[in-house]
Image (cartoon, rainbow, N blue to C red; front, top):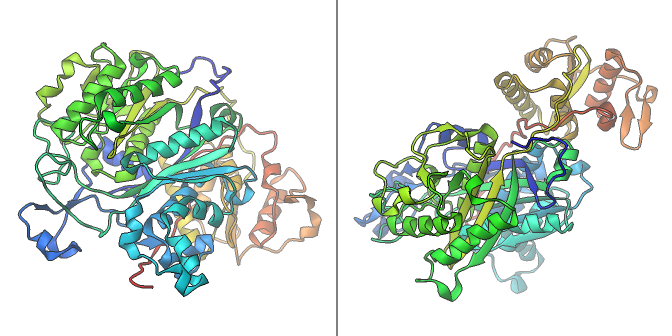
Amino acid sequence: MTDSPEQAYDPGDVAVIGMSLRAPGARTKEQFWDNLVHGRESVSFLEKDDIHVDETLIHSPFYVRACGVLDTYDKFDPSVFGISDRMAAAMTPENRLFMESAWETLEDGGYDPDRLTAEIGMYGANNPQTAALYSSPPDRVSVGPEAIEASLAWSPDTMTSNALYYMGLTGEAVTVAAVCAGFHYAVHLACQSLLLGQTDMAVAGGAMVRLPHPRGHLWEENRILSKDGHCRPFDANGTGTALSSGVVTVLLKPLAEAVADRDHIYAVVKGSAVNNNGVSAMAYGLAQPERLSACIAAAMEVGGVAPDTVSLYEANGLGLPMTDELEVHAASMAFGKQTGTASIGGVKGNVGHGGVVSGGFGAIKAALALAHKKLPATINLTEVNPDLDFPSTPFVPQRETADWDPEAGIRRAGITSIGGGGYNAHLVLEEPPTLAERAPEAEGRPRLATLSALDDEALAQQRARLREWLIADPELRLDDICFSLNLGRKVMDRRWAAVVRSRAELIDALSDDAPGGPAVATGTAPRVDAGSFRRSDLGLVRSGEDARSLSDLAAAWVNGERVDFGSLHRGEASHRVPLPTYPFRPRRFWRTDW
């Protein structure tokens, strides 16, 4: 950990301040982490009737009915973004998933799109093939403006610009095409833009929906897809991986600014690098050890990171002995001759190969490992491939989940992503810095906590989820909770507010519907005279410091008045903290014709 909270932060460091993930077996990053630490495999083995492919394929003796299924691949909540049902159906599933994930990432970081005046970069990777397989639009020239509008929703290129537009943001929008290294490329480009001062914050990530969905694959010997549907990274009996889908986004900001803005920091991007094998490849699409090694070494060099301080290497790890051997050889050259200094893991054993988001699964695993100070096991590893010769490398396979206690005194992770066509990419993440200690929270001070949603059902869901979250994490401070809720969530029509003096009171208020309690909600809040409040350019300001004035302000807000929430927290040292994000109410949207 960093010794001095007052240090001058490296100007090249970028903080990860928000994250969102949907993966096979996990609708949230918290579920994903729970699956990892408990060694769960989320690849499904499908029934014949659940597979939508040609009958000839299904009956082939080499057809493997394994798939990392994404259960929300065909669903979306357009109402949150003001999108019509017709447009929602026209949008590809990757466009829709990326938009919801970007929203969750901003909320996880504690930022409301409506209150952001900064330039927000949006960088994302998707699979161009999905658009063609979903439903290609007609010729735009012959059918007129409606098809043009629909094609903008349909186009892979506009995934990131759609997210900016429908979230009410401005900034750069870059949709990346780098096949399976797409997530890493998006993060790399986002960090460059942040460090050049072109954007203030950036959302980077990717979305992948394999169509038809769900589907299995045809096994071919010495190809990357598994013979039995299981991925066994570094195992002597590995035969490859399974296909999967998902979406991952992260919210990024220069580290010094994130600390100054009291953001929650999951991890720090110390360095990133990308390259391509080009003509040097042994075979087009296979890793080229010298080029991959140069990419890994470059990411460490740009971040000023010594290889012996990197104690987790999250591999691309396809689970095919030939590709695993190439990768371990390349990484060993980049790390040097030291032995046994880094854990090596492979998340594809848990979730399969997510294409453009596969590197995102590895990056979220590494970021959460840094945050929790724990190394998840690599599953399906029963017999280590002796040809990898781990004893002569810097790496030790992580066969059991364990606490992360690095010899170097600081936790750092390297995450590799390799794409067909010679794409190489590597990220180096570091644990968050130690922040200055704060005085204990003042006891008994009344505080305002707010929630809002589009309808009463979603509002009830928010209350229930927040209550469960607070019970599960007793370390959260009330001032941080209120700061994050009041300033980090979009204000919607149906509202709930409570004036409380402790976490316990807030937990009770979230479950208490009795009139006369500390909470008020739309339709039941008492009427107050808005003219009795002072006003700023941002809305009403409380008239006093007592609980009554705060209760009156809560009632005014619940009844539709605009409130200057920033004035409630002025002069405080409250921090943004992760809290449950908006409970989307997705419905199925699927285009079958134009």
